[in-house]
Length: 125
Image (cartoon, rainbow, N blue to C red; front, top):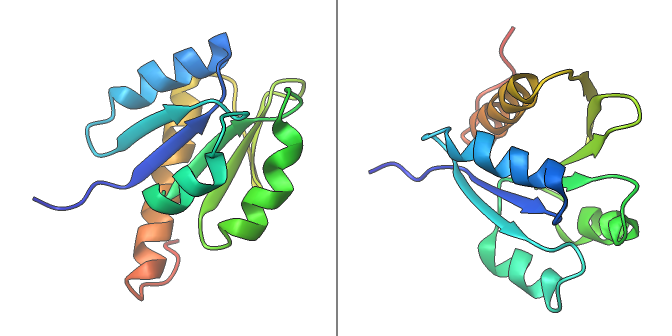
């Protein structure tokens, strides 16, 4: 069986509840969830080696995003910005999202892109 990309959700908000349910329906992904202020978060992420981390911006604990980028430089980091209804791929670019389906499509696309890149393939057009 092929390894499914691991997506880690950081946060305990109602929004993250919805993201967890929606991404949980994506059978091609392995989704795990943890609090952004959890003790030992850095070590947990290093042991999990996620392909993608999703974090809600402008919440308690989101200031740790900079350390996540430093500690997990090859891991995609998606920031959910509710004030502008957008998802920011903090490692490179942003997508406008209006619905949970939009968010699921962004996650699938970014994970697929990261998978292709790690296997030596280039971006698709």
